[in-house]
Image (cartoon, rainbow, N blue to C red; front, side, top):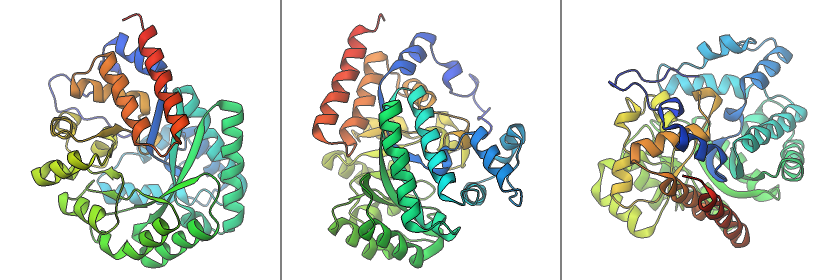
Length: 358
């Protein structure tokens, strides 16, 4: 819903400007998504319903007004708006409904597997008991797989702007209340003013409990934040990571060690982390041999979805259908899906490509 950039002769890169046959290929392509936020995936319809249920919120109740509300001046403003939507989720039924409806939207895009970034501390602060929160997301997860064929897994995310107390609570919930779907531990929120190294003890604790490390880094800052995520937080994947493009040594390290980046092109423009899609460093990352995955981040807030992000990436990288299929397989390989599941989804992608008339 954020305005698309208008500063290139061809206009913005989007699904509407991609070749029709490739857009059709992307729409039917089986996909995995690794960087998509729980509350940030709430559709305008669901956000409007929650706002109507909680009339004391500043969030508009009309979907058209939501489009203007979701226009961001900068990254700090995005965080402010995001938190206002988080505050709409006030009880376990809100959580369950939101989660299941996100899976329904994913199913429409042929997303087979998703690692949803969840920030339980924010919901607990709103008064939802931690156990009730876990039960709600797990109930929705089981129902989504049964009813919709969408496999969900969780990344519990520290809201960095709330500091170390939030990190302690997130680590406690991840390690002591660990729901069946939890696979990883993350860190979101603003990067500026919240250095990654201070969160090291909490990542150490989560890693010792068997969770994977997947912090955000290098979205609105430079390569030094990515280095901190790798050296201090032992990141196995990096959320965004686009600041790495400014450091050849870091690019070589990521490529050599096959550390994936979770790239979200439209998000980076919407939050003003890059000036336009045509200026996005995705081609530089790929040219350096870095393993990239394509993701939507907070899709309704940014007026996008995963299908659109794939068509954007295809145009930026000059990919045909086979290239797009390989990009989809990057996400499968970089995921924390079990080996049998990875093999099954990769084979489904190969079969879809082989049957594609183009």
